[in-house]
Image 1 (cartoon, helix red, strand yellow):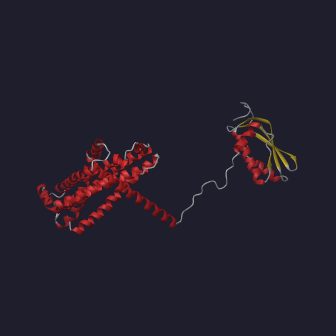
Image 2 (cartoon, rainbow, N blue to C red):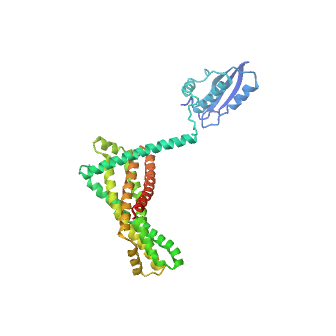
Length: 384
């Protein structure tokens, strides 16, 4: 809002006069707009401090040409100055529009202490908060596992409500479309294992045992672990992003409104698809890892390909193969559950989707490492 307009108005200026020994008046002249340089209110404070004690400050606006929020800002500063020094500010000499805007601007003053202050929590408070969050997260995880198990039992009984076309689509996305990255990583892991093993075995002239080293490592555990980590970063994150976006768009709420269980319709096909495809991808990763070791053995160690193949066949047993496939099946379930759980727990904002994806990948990888430790201990106990 602005007062009288004039293109050739003089710049903003003011003068201070004294009506009585305890009263000052400010004469406003020129154009008080934001686009022009405005006088500083510090000059008024100097005038108040140098003369006799002032009780009241008034205004005269006969020479005021243009004004907008620039004048309003100046008046608010004068009013704050009067409040600090215990003086009375009288605005009756100003135009009605200025007085109305000033009343509007100062109608609801800022409440002291309303601004949020960041308090630093103590160490014990942080530990307690982390423990409570961990307990809640553990309970949520157990609840999700229970719901997933119930949905799986209903599927075995033919009562689960999901579309087989969705299952086939997810099988393709998590299986055939993952072959390129699984091939590359598994081949490189086999190359690395063979190269590292050859460095030590060359000392004893036992380069041929590189075949056994790579074969046993890949088939028993490394193929499953590398495949699981790849799928956690690729498919698990994809599951979390899909379900998280559906949560943001309220599509999951729509399914609940229609009486369709999101656990059966969305989570179950993803878990089943990944549990089926992970052992197959693990078997493929084992072959690619052994091929990587063969490349190092033949081209770096001058081993005969037939001799390398025979040594691998003697070292790798079906027991090792079944242990690796069991690893991969467990990893598939863990990755699918991690991705789906974080997606279902996603908040209602775009940033929450990113948090859910990150949490799904971290949860999946940690679950894989922990499960590997447990399975290794169990295999050692039963003598496998």
